Image (cartoon, rainbow, N blue to C red; front, side, top):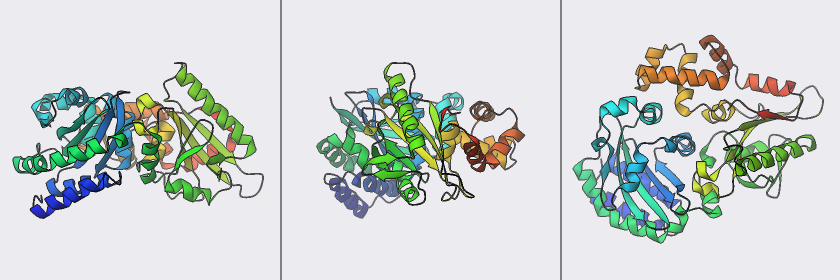
Length: 397
């Protein structure tokens, strides 16, 4: 830990930098993480008007972990109700409310938090009013316990400044198109990703997606609009519009993942592009993705991708980050008991995750699952080349 006066003064300067640049909150969180140590620091906000998670960022938190929590695990997090009822200006420590017996049997801890190296949470509210609730959380590893008294004293000296900066910049923590464009989560993913309206207007394309546009003729931008070959463009937009209609009419909850298989004209080496897309529903994603649902489109291009990453596994099969790690260890020949020991979770948790992996990948036995994983993404590309229709139906995700 570094709780020196020099560190304190640096943190103060960074806190007030956030008034001019929202991205500076990341620097604040990184400074605090360097000061107090632990697993990670997390800043999150709930939009009071819509009652949903509207902001999420942190230090030492991988983007896939952040996205996984936003899209799935916030809904089974047993701490959320406790946090929302906590008093402002006080610290809440989760180990005072959830003992080891609870943790050993809880799917949030066993399926998400502990596999990511976290167990203990110390959190306080920076803002709570009719617009938003902004919380600052410190995650610590198993065996570390909650924040020690000297770290809490250091943070309590900083807290009035953080509260003031959060209140003055509160508009940056609630629903807005500006918050979406400025948010760096999607841009940090290695997989090419675009966020689009259901009409095909690009709201955000990450760096990997921008590189992809220079490597293939099958996806281009015309201003802010995504342009696909004529045979694929209209069916893609029709499926996007159908997803939004189903969501708004209550026929679906936005969790469907569809596939898009494209190839150039005949030739010895046709260009191929493989995509997965699903709807981002405001009630199920962070508020900075906008009130209207957006389409999240993942691409795989064999001519430019170096390796498949967990984002593509999530898009293709709906595997969580923890399930992806279990699948990878299985592919390496590690038995289930060894996987449980390696990830620090219960054996029964790994067994349940394996059952979920089988269901999501439509496999029944470990050898079949391993063959599937070892052949991705080549197997996906081969299926795309054989697929006669430009846009397939719902995927396995």
